[in-house]
Image (tube, rainbow, N blue to C red):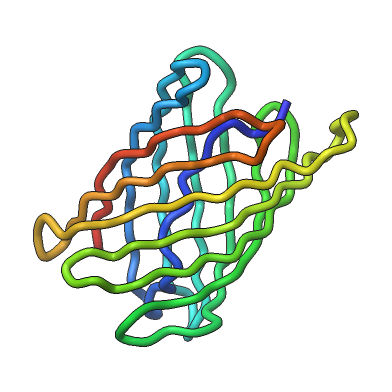
Length: 168
């Protein structure tokens, strides 16, 4: 079984020492399953960010994961980043991603492409999907976040993420 949920996030990399905490509810549309996700991110060094994720569905096993993200390009109008990580949802998996975002003040729009390699999986396929999101400031230290996953044919697990991201 492939990981059925994730919270992807924007392409921009946090500055060194800055941290965020994101709380997201995810509605998995095909099975009408609700998830609660928590995600913490920390800017480790110039152009490097580490994130950890925990998710719990209504019925089922928890999801845990970690990712490292590196800045490829970043400026006032947008960003491009890439990264990888590992997660566990019923079995271990490795992941890689490429993300882009645009600054349309006050909105941030992003999109990404992610691939997972499910370890110990007997099926000979790699989940690959596209996703898009936006964030809107709601206070000087918080923003509303919305994401939508559109999965490749053969992996029909679209989901809608809605939540808040807090800056520290």
